[in-house]
Image (cartoon, rainbow, N blue to C red; front, side, top):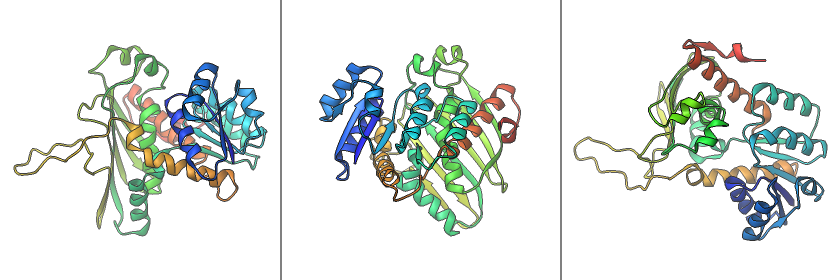
Length: 333
């Protein structure tokens, strides 16, 4: 297979390195709006570089991986689908709900597959939790608790264009709540706080947030988010049922400290960030895309799934701003 990759930033470069390692991939060609960056990445990785994005599309591709800036996602997805090229695109589909729906509407009549990158679905722990729920071994669910706690905030420029903590960060938790539980979120109540850098306030964002989600069967989920977890990158999901529980992310790397007498500390070290924590999941996700691109499997996470997670994030942001419970139906377009 000959695969293209648009966007040679940190995650794009990592994905290109992964793609070239697959036996089924004969060649990888990369491109970027910054041609110099694409050339540098290609030289470092030993892959091809296209002169620009149009040249990338003219490279006889069997599939395209999109890791460009968010505002480029819609155009690149639609261009690939129009050209009959299977697409993998990092979340989000677009920067907002109307843009996401516009893409979904335009690709709805096409048989060209589109896969959206929610890598936690391919993490072994989340997959095991989903299987435990589906098998019934946990009994009926009553509570899920999800956390995404970043060790340090991103740059101010990133925050200003991120869409906010719920849309940028919490959307992964919202997706796995749906993925693991098999249920839909119908109502949210969210709050946020700022105790760190001023640039969060300037961007209309928060550095810490919590949301209570009510699922369509009455199960409750609590999502906690922060940009300031000095102990390390902490991503977990706790699933509690009437007959048992399952915990994702509780291993030697979990940045947790027990103050109970005689309890030894976890050996660590904590993961420094998402790339390290989810490296195996990213590899599995891209392996799955090879099957999608080759026509061996349907997309495991389509644009409609991304839209549902986006709806929850949008409802949380509205709830935070208006300080009230919000039905997800309120933000549906």
